[in-house]
Image: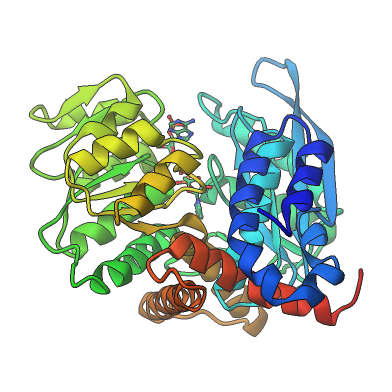
Length: 444
Ligand code: NDP
């Protein structure tokens, strides 16, 4: 880093103890160095230093009462990162590991991802260190209501439109939407990922996983490859993982493994997705339960072990930094030809470097998993138009968006002299529109 080195230094100094945020910023600034050289007017206008500082960061208390009458206090966050190209947009994560640095890394990434979708959405992210695991339905509802009682002041259909993420699915969105509507007395598209009966979009549930496969398929096609007949491993067993597995199978691949934070299952015949949906979506159980339904499948109590299973394509869909340099070496040694990031920042910088060096097709998260937020954007459009599109219509639009994200990212990579480097391409393509908008709007 040359021109942008002091921007990064300032980020590290100003945001101590936030390694994930530093990691995300470093990768983007490294990619943007040639853009800074080409556009001195952006440097002069402080675009880069403004880009790494969130417009607003909200931290709040979330008190709630459990089923035994005990009071608990969690911490809530909403980081409104950048609104240059549209209202803030990004998910809410409920997981004990959530802290300000995690939310900032996610919010920062979200700005570029949303720009890549070509839809008018700024970037934001939020959540809480609340752990939904093992909580009753009523406890989840009370928590969501308390969370929304504060968040309501900061969001709105033209201001900030949150969605789901880890630990926040249709149930949680429903409880939060109910509370928002009660407090505001307004029926608006303020959240996405809503149920179909009250303004949700068909295909939103499937969108991130499906979009990941559409994007990876484009990258494979560019190298005369496809999903057909390939062996695929997918980490995670939540929303993104399940629908990535579904689409990969529809495209002719065999998905043989899934995991959660406790361990992984290996089914050499191909994972039975009806069983996984039953366990995860209906029973809210653990992936280990799969082996009880299919006794030939094997369960291993070590989630990271999943990367040692030989495969052609790996789709990390659980969480940040879940695949490190050592895992990348193992995948490459076992003949893996493509890695598509369904989760946000699942591969460490060492892993990414190895993939790029070894000419593995690498689909970076902010491009490859943008299908979720793109379909959230389509949900916002449907809410504004007060109509709903069919599953096929939404799926077709999603496919078109993923294809254009791939084209834009690969063209930007080629323009800056490294045609196979989609990390570079996605960062630059995402940046272009935000930078032009910020530049046009003056120093604000
Ligand atoms: P879910 O809560 O539905 O599922 C998360 C899955 O990841 C679970 O299987 C969970 O296992 C596993 N997981 C979470 N934390 C860890 C950890 N520390 N170690 C190992 N496994 C872990 O979340 P989503 O599927 O929605 O999200 C997955 C990823 O995709 C996240 O990075 C998210 O930011 C990203 N993403 C999601 C989008 C969406 O539309 N939902 C859109 C774009 C990105 P366990 O039950 O054991 O915790």
